[in-house]
Image (cartoon, rainbow, N blue to C red):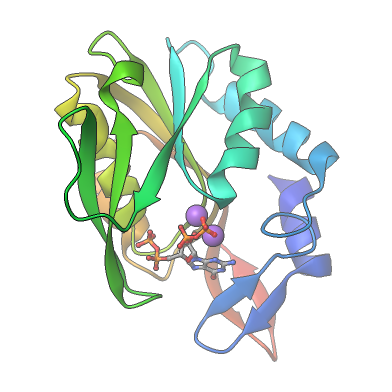
Length: 190
Ligand code: G4P
Ligand code: NA
Ligand code: NA
């Protein structure tokens, strides 16, 4: 998606450890007009698919999912990150190991809002090692629902997530795939 790549080139900041900061338009301050274009692009890429719900994970995924949902006309469900060990039986849970943050956390959604009839599109801001996406798809499977696909705004193509998800047979659409990045040369896209 050229508009997105242009914006990353203009306002993205490359940090130590292969981290791309997009705080001025996606992760902290949010450019709603850009999110509207992103929402339309997701709609275009999943055209013809039956989707009944968009699933994302707090926090950064929520804004993206909410704007995209306007074009899909479906509700948004966001998985909560929980620090509680003992979670009651009314929720589906899954463990996510964050390599970036070096910790494991539980994610959960209420059983009330994820039904076996649901055809779910998973959306998130970044795809790095893919653990968040795998955790979300496990929640959907546990509910007996269907993962229609996954939409990612920025995929870090040099990390393993994209390959992991595609290997699982999940229809993955990433709007910008970064092949490599460095402070000297900037971002190179696939
Ligand atoms: P994974 O889910 O793909 O395995 O990713 P990983 O654990 O490595 O990433 C942990 C968090 O860092 C995720 O956000 C992810 O979106 C974000 N992230 C990964 N690489 C980058 C990057 O280069 N730039 C930015 N800005 N974020 C990156 P999170 O912990 O779920 O936090 P939240 O922001 O959604 O609340
Ligand atoms: Na995220
Ligand atoms: Na994030």
